[in-house]
Length: 219
Length: 219
DNA sequence: ATAATTTTTTAGACAAACCTAAAAATTAAT
DNA sequence: ATTAATTTTTAGGTTTGTCTAAAAAATTAT
Image 1 (tube, chains in turn orange, red, blue, green):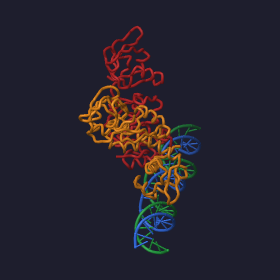
Image 2: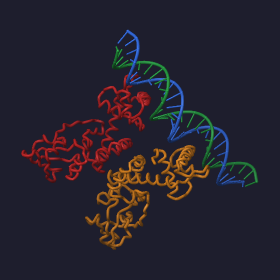
Image 3: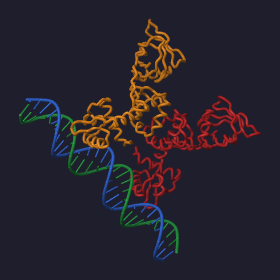
Image 4: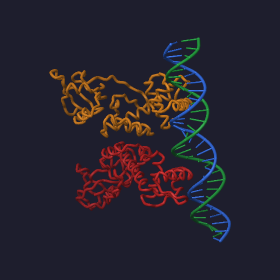
């Protein structure tokens, strides 16, 4: 099913506010998030109810139907993949990407998203660490480890960075540390809590405790 | 100035139909191109006239004002850059890209386009050889040469491919020949009219007359 | 030059997505 | 348990972009 621009925004908003659960979402909460008026929310909820995308009962709030949820997840997937593109390929800072991704998420082409996903190396999550739903709408949450706690000899895929300051991002860029890269702990140095690691099995670098505290990996 | 989705489509249509010249564009021509009705065109032309983007006189057709032309060129630039992205980065075939680029061209962010342009290596033209206007709306047409006619020792940037069959595109892909690559004629072989060339000064390959007939370069 | 044809415009409607202001329902407070 | 406050909905209106059908202008044919 294809939705209008506006419908997509509402579906995504409900999904965000109910955090993937069954929780009822209130009209005012949505109005605030979407920067619109409560009356507009009501209008749209009635429309989406008729379309079978939400369950809406007057004065009670809404939940997504399974169909509606799948649509919302698809939009979210697009949003997150474009965010990865903007950061990893176009070198945007993390603060600048949301607004642009809000536009890009409405581009309608399944094959485009497939290819973008592949082009980006099938990233596990966006720069902020939010897990990207896979092509069939499943959200596979792998356990994540703080780099600091990884044992010697262990490899993992860099899947999120906690600090999003420009300084840190530049540090990472210079050392070719990027989302989706494979990082392997070669040796942990007790003295200063730093560690020697390799990136993509290629070259060895030493990263300090401050750095390891800000990198999350999936095994 | 910011325009609506629809306004942008109309501006681009006028620009396409007048081929960058002052030529008057008729209502029916636009209706056909935009797959809409003549009455809708009239409505929009009156609106754009009020906004100062076109000069419209009843029953006489429209032309773009300088402002309107600059807007149209900006949209075209975005369209063409996204097409390069789709082909060069996401490996789309040339037939599949237009529809997607029609959507992407409406994404509103100057910085996004700047960075995309840079990411793509500031391409001179789209895969079909249409020149991409630069950031300040100028269309710089460099003379283009058929590869076949290039003298030994000469280098140029691949700027268009005439044949867009899947077979040819695959041939190019395999040999790492892509839009924007630097091609240098090492030796022209009289016997079969083939030539030895290097791609990006890196490796030498031999390309037949049939190939050179389908590659255009700018010096 | 007049009639026939085609093109273009006007007039009036409609759907989508929003709004404001007032009414109704729910929730909180005494 | 009423009253007060808040939330939500309804009713009616606006803008954008589309449409159809009819009128007007321009073009082409006789």
